[in-house]
Length: 401
Image (cartoon, rainbow, N blue to C red):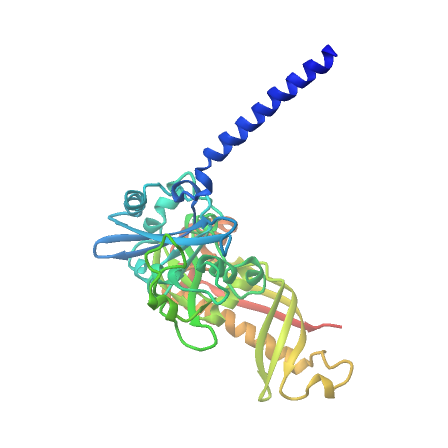
């Protein structure tokens, strides 16, 4: 009996303690309200430059209550200052919280940043201990603030849609020159001192042309949710072209052909698709088992850039004979089409080299490779390797079996 009385007393005490703990948790949770200062996460940053200095736009994801229509909303805040760090501090003064950017996965540079040195613009992100070096970096035409304000077709955050357009899958198919802060610093710190990044373009979903993004994102904390944003057409993002920098200075944009050639030798392209014309007929050729390399050699006192590319090809589409009317081997590629495909790729490499020479932008890494493997010759030709070197192409395309 005494034992049962003790157990009942312990149970009553435990019950009171549990109730007290639950009440404490309930009242310390602000009744389920979301505090933007504590719960918002900056996922993307846009940087623009103007007469008054830098304008930094932070796009933040804000959790919403479970009973709401969605699990996450987003808001955008823009700060201005003489430097990027000063603009970020202005965001702090406007919102009451300082964005540490620990979860920032995307940095977009506006067209106006082309007038400034790339590493002056990015300096803050390298010095900030919280910014991950894996954050993707891209450049866009027009304003980075307007780009981040665009509304994607799927209703998600614009930063998420842009990251999908810069994904590893697109990089591995040769359709995007995806880079992050770490890779840009490595390229700039090498003897070549050249860097590149995806050039983001925006088109209206279901239509053509550039969509000038305007209005703020769909967020209760954003002041841009006006009637104008409801009329705004959804946007689609692509990164088929590439912005190029020499010594931190913007020198131009690679077209799709040149960007594709750069990706073949700078990225691990697993599968690619290329269009070629053979005997007046258009062919779409799939390339797999791709292997593209660029190496520097020296023939006497002459540097030679040797570009080598190997791939297996199969016909994916053609105007001449649909697969349904062909044989079981209709996917095989004739020697004539293989030769035309190799010529198309070689022309793309040649176009890339012409861009590099005309802008003195060593995207292929000629100075870096000559410094590493032929240092004596590099010391004689430092800064002039692109103009002094010869180029040899070795492109072989075989048909799949």
